[in-house]
Image (cartoon, rainbow, N blue to C red):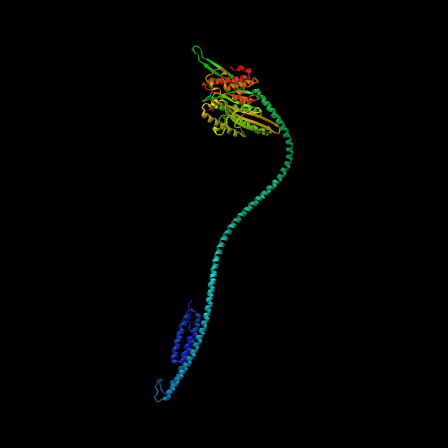
Amino acid sequence: MSRLPVMSSKRVLACSSAENAQDLAPAQKRLRKDADLVKPAATVIGTKRPALAATRAPLCVIKQSVASAAAKGGNMKQPVVSTGTKTGGTQKRNPWDLKGKVSDMEDKVRNYQMKVKTLNQENEVLQDSVSQSQRKMVQVEKELQIQRSQIGEYERKLQVLAGVQDELEKVLSDKNFLQKELTNLEGKYKVMETLRDSQETELQTLKMKLSVQESTLARVQANLRDSEEEVRSLKETVAQQKDEIYAGEMERRRLHNTIQELKGNIRVFCRVRPLVGGGLPKHIQLATSDNKAITLAKTEESHTGKTADTQKNYNFSFDRVFGPRTSQQEVFEEISLLVQSALDGYNVCCFAYGQTGSGKTYTMEGDEFDETRGVIPRAVQQIFKAAGKLGEQGWEFTFTASFVEIYNETLRDLLYTGKSSKRPEHEIRKTASNEVTITNLTYERVINEDQVLGLIALANQNRSTAQTAQNDRSSRSHSVFQLDIEGVNAGRDVKCKSTLCLVDGWQRDDRHQGDRFKEMTAINGSLSNLGIVIAALANKESYVPYRNSKLTYLLQGCLGGNSKTLMFVNIAPEPDSFGETLNSLRFASKVSAVLFPVFTGRVH
Ligand code: ADP
Ligand code: MG
């Protein structure tokens, strides 16, 4: 803010005192000059502050008073002019007119005195005006001070307001944020409201359902009480019927065994493998009337050419003859009765005998597909199924599987999984309770069919490893699968124990390959030993030479007493297998004849 040029009052006073001491004329000039000095100040003030224009008023007053004083002075001159002796006013007095001159001088003095008086008056007026102005200036300065402080105040307030503005902006943004959040929350609230509404409806529905169910429950509880009463009486009936069932089961076992014994504890079945291309060759004839006879026909050409060719027939009959079209299922149906016997506590042994490629493994193990599965997987399936059913009658079964190979009178564990270099040696031993066991053999506890199938796969793997090492091994070895079955009926305090024994690869002795048409006596080794053992058993001889071969020694538990034995003789249909086939059939027939001496005539 510009500062106003303020004239010092001292200077004004000094001027006025000096003027008093001087002539009127110079005093007048100076007065004008002083007035001029004051004027610009007044102009400056006037431009900036219209309020100060009032200070100019005294100046106008001064001019007016000067003018009036001048007018008065004029009046004072009037006498001088009217002294008429000197016409025209400026008329020069005569040197002698001293009186006139004095009067002129006196006029002049009066005139001057008047002027002085006027000037003094003017001066006073001016001084008044100056002091007035000074007072005003002081006042103005005070006001200025006040206004400055006010401005300072305003600036502070402005700063405060700026802060307030910032805060306001912050508050505004907060407000916007909160507004958005509010909208958001309102949206959520609406959703929650809808949810609440739907849940309330649901609750209502559930309440209704609950009340319905409560009444149902009450009804059911009433029914339950009735049922409990009924159950009590039914339980009594069940206990009674269980006794009857048990008695029935025991009766069934007895009858089943009688039937099996009537059928023969040792049975011989013959199975003819189909030709690779299908059909049946001319040299094998199956009886159409029954399924027990098979004829092997041989045409002998006339050596001389003069006589007609002669045909020689070899007729055999067995417990059952299966033709090449017989399915695995049909074959198993015959065996399944024996499998039932195994569960009933009788030892069962099933052999497959025949030349290589005649279908022994196919009969015993078969292929992996359902219809082509062989005797072992089917028997295992039947056993686990039947054991499950007997469980309902209080029977609990444990099954133990083992798989052993007999090759050159040496035993080999087919379930062995350790290092081949550490394979242990095995011996057949008899326990105190007259049971046959093999030392160091793997006896695996099994609880389901799949586990047994896994063991069969492991055995096959073990067998094929051994076969790679010795080429003709499979045609000279027998593999014996044994499933020990132990059943306990704790409620009835009864137990049963049996073994199901399935033998594959039981091969006639190779030393007699060439002796096609020789008598049965030519067959020895394991096969003849088995024949001898079976014969001794059939004749109820006191001594049965089980120990003569590892096979008969191992199977002795399954061969004697009320054990069931089934022998499959597998036949290869190719004409060049004629000799082997005849030998196989003759051996089987001999076994049959031993068992049924009455029908020895069947063997030709
Ligand atoms: P083995 O064990 O007596 O040496 P296999 O059981 O291995 O003989 O049978 C030789 C071949 O003949 C196998 O390929 C087998 O699948 C087949 N085979 C055997 N018997 C039958 C049959 N009844 N029906 C169809 N194929 C058979
Ligand atoms: Mg085989």
